[in-house]
Length: 252
Image (tube, rainbow, N blue to C red):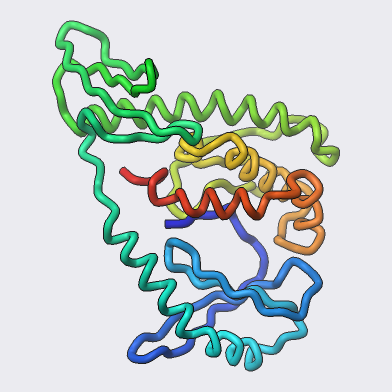
């Protein structure tokens, strides 16, 4: 599964038929000056086609149809991956992410102790009065949110030092989302997904920088991508890595 930062740029929904299946795709404006059509199938089975304005819809559709076999195979592969995703049981021995690293979950039943979550010796220890998947899930979610507030605020402070167009630290809010890593409100508030704290630092930085660039340029325009290239030259590689991990990071 792949989720992304909010996109307020104009887009157009289109489709084509391959065999018995109608495949939907989204046309968006390609951020760089190029006459080429770029087709990408995301791990969440979204098909996005980037093209400059000079390419008409008919020509774009012809280009997509020429790659229809490849698109269909990519969709089949990602659908298989999604079917293989196992719902968490919240029991000892499971693997959970934090800041890009995997930690084994250890659930400890201690009726007389305070319920808590601790990161110790490469393990996520969850102390509960009575073992219950619901209780373990709740405690972990609260722990991730607390860590997310601390990590995101600290990274935002550091990244603001290289952002010349932001005069003061914007308000930061958390919101659990399943289609976006983050967004930027019209009032200049940055909203981040607490699940993002499970990703590596550079992935967190990418999402924060993406939203900071939106404070200057609200759409995904040429200017927006120039700003992104300025503050994080390798952002596209980081984004691909983050997208590829989305299923694992959002697994509940």
